[in-house]
Image: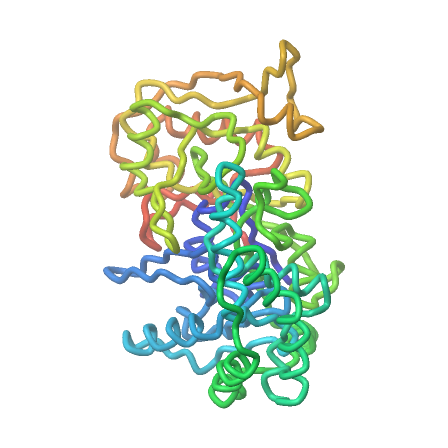
Amino acid sequence: MPAIAIIGAQWGDEGKGKATDLLGSRVDHVVKFNGGNNAGHTVVIGDEKYALHLLPSGILSPNVTPVIGNGVVIDVEVLFEELDALTARGVDVSRLKVSANAHVIPSYNKAVDKVTERFLGSRRLGTTGRGIGPTYADKMNRIGIRVQDLFDESILRKKVEGALDLKGQVLTKIYNRRAPEIEEIVQELLAYAERLAPMVCDTGLFLNQRLDAGETVLLEAGQATLLDVDHGTYPFVTSSSCTAAGACTGSGIPPMRLDQVIAIVKAYTTRVGEGPFPTELFDDAGEHLRKTGAEYGTTTGRPRRCGWYDAVIARYAARVNGVTDFVLTKLDVLTGLEQVPVCVAYDVGGVRHDEMPVNQSDFHHAVPIYDYLPGWWEDISECRTFEELPANARAYVEAVEAMSGARISVVGVGPSRAATIVRHELL
């Protein structure tokens, strides 16, 4: 049976939570394969609204096994807080499985993250300050702490000592901050072990066995393609692999078992944090998208930067990820506009670019070239078939589909689980 990847096609916040939840009730396992609590999914079920950060949104589906894969970095305190909050609302969280190879975010990395951003000043990257980047850096520098290390005090102590040999010097001599005590950090991490232990397993083995048994695995990305550390708008990116390829490395599922790649793309574009954004709006239109679409970060509460749909980015995401299907979300936010601009190419110094420019400098200076599509005024939030949409709304979907490199199989017309139009079945 298939493994299916769901990824973001823009800079995140496209509505992956809703799409994952929509599919999650029809699959057996939902895996978060990258990132940490630096991003979130908002899922609306009936009158209930859930904001998830570390947990896969499959945790809200009673027959699904949620899995945190080896590619995730885990703030264990935040994990426990999320589990407790869901339990208090009657959600069964006992099925959660956590990779023994996932890395843990120690408190000293949160301190390093925050002071580094302040130190950078105008050159800051716009991180969330939650220790994500420093923990991934530790992973690559081979001084990271993994979940399995919490169950061996001797190994844990040696790893903390090794990490703080460097981190302590950085905090005290560069940033004039107190260096953490080794024993303090060791005891802080050991305190998590007892509660965490029943959740921990070899998730790569588990998932491959489940695929062999004919079950379906859904791989859910944190962040999105343009935030990928290799394929995003570097250096204004996250520290992990957010693409379909990252789904394999972050879960232990081999590439040949990945049957479908579903990319989530918003009917306009947003991003949080610093970095280039060709279609960004600084006028009333941008404020209209922000307010109408409730564009504030699930994790940080920061107002998102807003702009028109960028077909160049969508084509890039389709190519990088091998997208088989797009899910277009928040089409309802565009209701009431006389015309809707769509970026079809860029002008860089008088030269037209129909694909992403090769270098970051050109992308930073890219000026969008727009096509203007007629808008619609009818309320579409109750539409459940494509034919029920106003003619101009249908034309908008068909136009951006033709520009974006893959079919648009699902259209979101509101925040709730039910506010969805399925044009082509995904499973």
